Figure 1 (cartoon, rainbow, N blue to C red):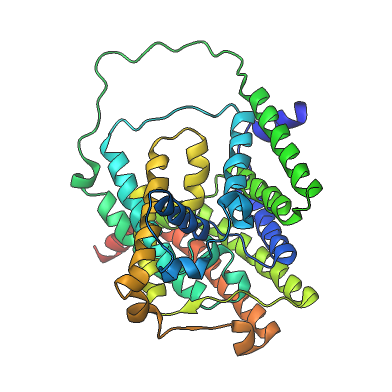
Figure 2: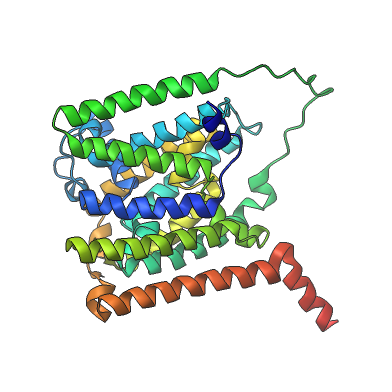
Length: 400
């Protein structure tokens, strides 16, 4: 138990957490030929819900695109998602950090739902969220990921402008009377439950391998590892962008850039060694619009899809509404894809652009790393010059 205590008594360095995540992401691609992603499975969950309530989705083109075969528990993408939930829950229990938390301002629940809907809609319009169109998209050398990143940054800026307004914040919820007395902390039993959940989960993974379902077993392993790493590192893609506008702080932005660079090198090696084809998505107006909507939505919601997942398992009720909003958003996009002409208007004219085909393998790697280094240096400059508005203050003083 002493080793567990050392690993769970405090959060991990985000550089280590996201760096290891980047390596595992490349390894998962090498083993399965697919990438770490979540909103595709959210889309399928939305489709299953529609089927459950009696709606025929057999003619919906977007569900044909993502594939609806089997149940969520029979797909590798399904176990990536559920593994992330369970992996995060295990580390949360081991650190005795589970607690039901309800926001004092009930309006936050509605805001989280609305933000989740916008983010989910935007993510699937762009054919990926902060993972497939960002963290795992860049290492796949898909040009659409760079468009999505820039658009997401723009969206988070507008989101920041909205959430700082008085009408969005509302009146602060004040507590009447004196604060409740501080209770003496008792030794938590949560770590024991965490060990129990972990043992049950390991047993399920062993069952997958023994019954001839190794891909599900692999997905369950990697999903749990991703969930543990993002929870312990408190990895938040929303924070990576939003903090730049709020305070100029760039710690998370720099850490994620570092993680993408590690994953890019590892994925490049996997592609060359195993001869795998990188997964390239369409670059189109939908990528720009989807990225802006995604950036706007995650700030309004207070978290992206991955951050939302471990916060749900911490007991934060707000993120259940964000999760529900995501499902609604991706389902609305699935309906509008062909029924409202979204594909023909915003996507059809696009084309998948593989940077390795465009520039050659090694030049694509060098250009991608140079872009990431540039992004890192911009984050360093921004943090140094605009921390809590200091850069703006300096400019005003020089003018005066």
